[in-house]
Image (tube, rainbow, N blue to C red; front, top):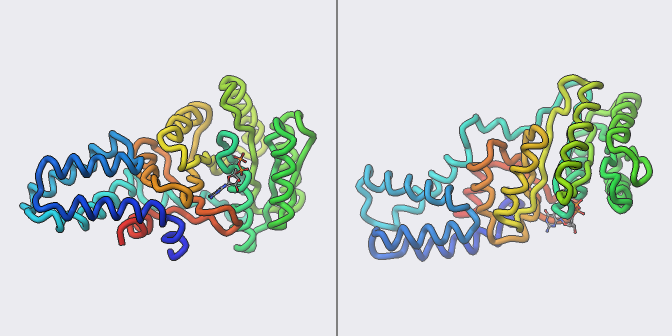
Length: 303
Ligand code: GDP
């Protein structure tokens, strides 16, 4: 939780300062609510989600007959934590890890969002838990992507299954599954290409990869994680919608949360997508990845 807190420092210092100023106003009035809306939208909470939060706050203020703005801070924390819980139960933030058989995790996302780094961090995380991890270099579009995954594989001690640049991603991932079985691996992370410039190709490629995985293991991929860059703000939501159309996402990884003061994007994503945020990236190093927890997040922002 210390890591969580320091990684979210930029967001928390900007948000907490702005909230303090809102809640130190002399009375609860229309102006105060408007200022609060500006603060939330400024932190990338998103317009729809902001309006919902402020509506809920108004409702509570009325119901509890609150007069003093200073009492609103804990109320805000409550509302945010509740929104982050979402409709489902909070355990959906956990990974769908299989016991005593191979878990296949597909990683998708646009180039540059931190996909390779995230795979390296996830590999490290599961290695630390004593799992045998294999990586499949399914982003065959860029030679650099294959090399970069190899660097991470060497760094964390995970085998990398790779073909030449330009080869069929589905074939690489097929080989990844065979290798993972032969070597008794617990988790296989599959990298994929992420060029949005050609949406039709991207979707076809993802569908083919999906088919190949399912032919080998009917209930796989056990997780399909979309990696999003928190610093791209509302753009990230757009990307999520496109990938959601291409494949069934089970979770989001929100990277570079350490690099933005607009970490409120996690709230917008939780609210506007049906997919839970499962991990957040808080830096470039291998242990800078944390399982996302809504309560810890709200606590890091305001406490
Ligand atoms: P890819 O093209 O999606 O595979 O992206 P990369 O994994 O190569 O990452 C792009 C850049 O973002 C690299 O310089 C990474 O070190 C950096 N990066 C990735 N995740 C994080 C994060 O959580 N925090 C910070 N500060 N940088 C990150």
